[in-house]
Length: 108
Image (tube, rainbow, N blue to C red; front, side):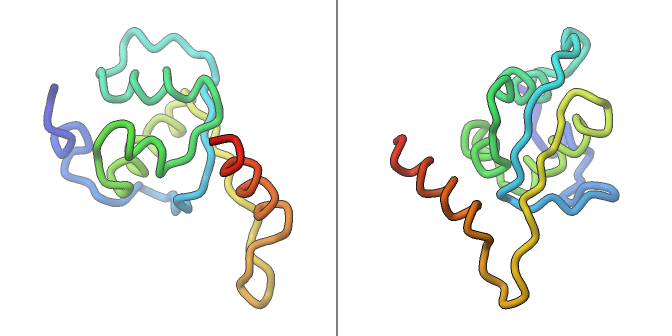
């Protein structure tokens, strides 16, 4: 495997995207044969909705690096990014986000 910093070109921030770590991504179904293994691995994993944190953990890379890789894939049309709903005025997450979090925790 190529070191991740080589894949990202040393970037630690995605260009033009500020993806929250709780963003979910799903694959678009495009052919991935021409992708580097790190990118292909993300697209294959994203056949089901997957968060940036999960991607980082499964690849063993920092979340910032996962964010750059996901941003590259989204720009190229391999992934769809589903950003979370904005927080309420007081900063607390919306009830539907808390419900989904609770469902996910119960499923594990």
